[in-house]
Amino acid sequence: MFTLEPRPDITLWTSLRSSAIALAITACISLLVLLVMSDRPADAIWQMLTFPWQGRRIEVQFGLVFQQTAYLSVIAIGLAVGFKANVWNIGAEGQFALGSIAAYAGYLALGSPDGLWALPFILLAGVIGGCLWALIPAALRITCNTNELLTSLMMVYIGSHILTYLCIGPWKGDPKAGQAETYPMADSIRPEAFISGTELHSGLLILFAAFTLLAIILLFTLLGYRLRVAQHTPRAERFAGFSPDNTVWLSFLISGAMAGLAGAVYLTAETGKLIQAENYLENFGFAAIVIAFLGRLHPIGILLAAFMISYVNVGASYIQASLGVDDSVADLIEVTALFAFLSTAMLDQYRIKLTSSPAVKKQATS
Image (cartoon, rainbow, N blue to C red; front, side, top):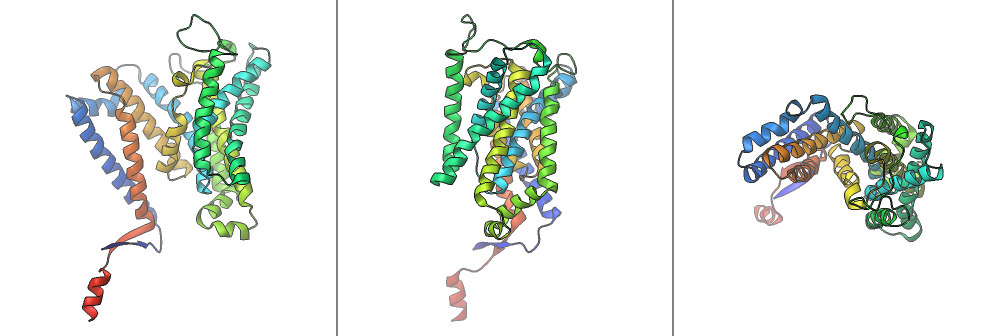
């Protein structure tokens, strides 16, 4: 029979080996999926891998990839803060929505300004909105000992319904629009693109700056050390003078702030208005959970995983348009990669050992 034996030492080689195995598994399954879904699988694979150099300008294609990478990575690193401390916030999609709502509320509270001076206040309102929404499941866990997995997930659906209600009710915009939406924000306060016709805008710089700041905090400060202690030896957290309750509060605050900031940037830079939930939310919050684990909760790994998933998503959209392949193949590849990386991650911690069964041992000794 097989048993798992903890490794006495974990090296860079074991991590690279398990990652390589996971990539190979993902590639093989993706190939099989494309063989089934496309009558030209070779063309589909080639175009998915090389789409930035086909069709539109390369800066347009990579602009879409970097756009998704920015949103996914900043939400994922916020979630990784809690995951490191065994605090399971999976409600970033709702915090993203409330960040957008709070940002638009800030815009209205300022009198619908048309100057760029208002943008920092609008983004700050989004951060506060995400934080406040995240504090609800945190408070329920600490005061009522509820499971934050369930409460944070339920808050996603409440947040999406609030978004839709505001778009069809108090903040309803042009009634002639084909969907429920608010009136658009002034163009003058929206981040401009660096390169005309691309998705590369200053809002992405704000997201990458927030990602970098949080990465430095996690890697080089006492907070990062505290989270590592909470992850590996929760009892040692108390002996080190850290409060588990404060860790829960802090984890939800940070993850809510990152998701809220992403929602505020998305509102100002991408849509310029709130839209009913099914047409506004892009599942960034749920995809970020996958990316956090694909990146092994490490900032560099998260950034690489976000780029990889974004590249696959944009490539899948491209082959859908060019070859008629359903772009849900990107979701399947994403889930396959998650399970592959999680299942091979045990190779970092354990080695598989073949042992004799108790019956065989007993027979051998008799």
